Amino acid sequence: MCGRFALIESLRAMQNVFGYPIDAEYIRRILDLSNRYNIAPTQPIAVVDAGLDGVRHVRLVRWGLIPGWTKDAKTQSLLFNARSETAAEKPSFRTAMRHRRCLVPASGFYEWRRMGTVKTPYYIRPRDGSIMAFAGLSETWLGPDGSEIDTGAILTTSANKLMAMLHDRMPVILDPKDWDEWLDCGNNRPRDVAHLLTPVQDDLLEAIPVSERVNSVSQDDEALISPLAEPLVVDSSSNIAEGPSAPNDDGEPPAQGSLF
Image (cartoon, rainbow, N blue to C red; front, side, top):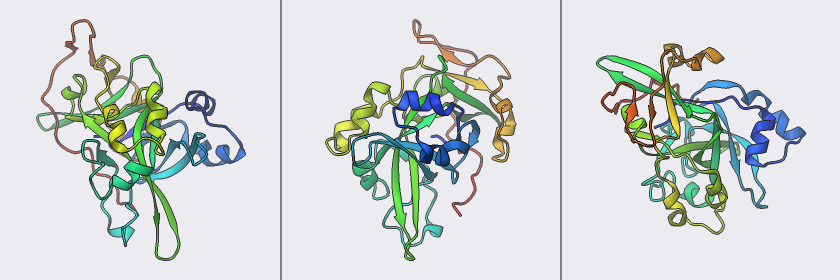
């Protein structure tokens, strides 16, 4: 699963990676969303989609998808993750899966490792320091009063060998070569892109033990991702994890706030 993540790239770096134009409107919408170290559900996140013109666009959505058929958004469960194996069939996600697939830029994400009664937070990021793109879904909810809320969710898949030491699920991290295929909702149906929704290779990421301050959504600074010990990694040659092992954590991350 993915209940917290970070986006600390500069505006220019994100534009270079995702290939959307930077203009005054973009800067107005996105300026306060870089250098964020503890993004939580209900907060605004940046997503990239192909747009009706086929050109990539960046926009803001609230993290926590509200299905279009929901009558009262205040009573809707917070759908910040969607299981990739079932999203195409689930009523909450199937329309977005068919028509509104997107990328969610991220520098890293957090997971909690349970050892006895203690849960230790880890910051998981690419070992080469590159930016990631999670597979995402977006939906615009129309209220009875004509109001609109743009919302989104992150797709998850089974854990790779590294993540299995922390949890049995992880976000779907898309390879840059597959971004266009994922975003092309006009030509590619959910079954056409299902092969993209797999765990990332075992040696791409590292898991860094970090401060428990990340448990509080009010904390948001660079010190949150400072290593407290050597990272967990997987050696590609031997395919054996380096560092101490631990049972899978099938619990939930710290409780999030309500949508409203």
